[in-house]
Length: 405
Image (cartoon, rainbow, N blue to C red; front, side, top):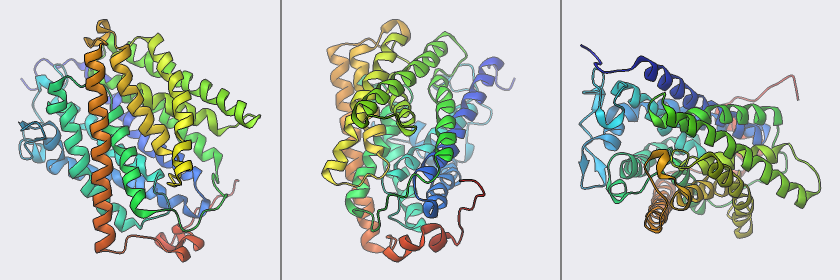
């Protein structure tokens, strides 16, 4: 019998969770697209949207195997084991969901792979051509994302050490945001910086709303079943979002002496990025604490690149990188063994610090090398003239037109 042992309710739960994660990529495109200038908005949205096609093909033709294939030395999976849907379509893999088809797990994990590198487009916005971005995307997925995901989620050496990351605080947020630092250190500052962004706060709010909506599937889907733990993860996601939103808003108000529409949105994203790795290991009160800490730590972290003049244009490192790192480390302090078997301890804390730090350093170094090689071997930078004209017009021969402002 095909798919023997599959629970249809769990499949339905995973279909919904997978769709929720998928819509986060368009949500991110709208969020970033509204934050930049009008004349550059389509370019950054294209960089994000096109990852859907590129990463899906990479995932089919070896990427999924590199992450979840048979472990080779603790560092990478067998690239041929599941290539071209081999042994996926009609199988259930007990290691990755006892009651769902392996094909469902394949699609759920694909959505994480798709959204990861687009997170860092905010770091290097208005600096590289579309062709350069595509080259970087392909190389980065192969040498950074696939290995890192295997180390942690594919029974690699970090997983064997006991390192845990429930929904991607390190695999996704740390790897992408720290890679953004490595890339922008090569590319330097934007050639033209104005104060004309965000150009469309309505677009930003739509994007943020989609991200907040999708994040419930992003985290809760990690349970791979419509079971009790999913309710805890779902709740943790919501309360951490609220904690980050309110604390960030309070700090912003105390500094600016007025309310801001953008700050609660950024605070919410910080809370969500920070709870992501810990969402399946802590109780709701701990999740509220984690979200609140994210509001404080990430609020001040975004000031570091500005002080260092790194030009992390959309504060990706301070929100996603620091948030993902913080949430990963807090597992060692706040994890409750009754939630998912992982208990806070000094040993767990040290493992979490080591794993998150290793991925952060690896991501920076490899990203720097990739961008350096691309910069030396091809023309990857946009010109000052192209920026002044607008990247949408100069690179795409298109413009963002709207009857409403």
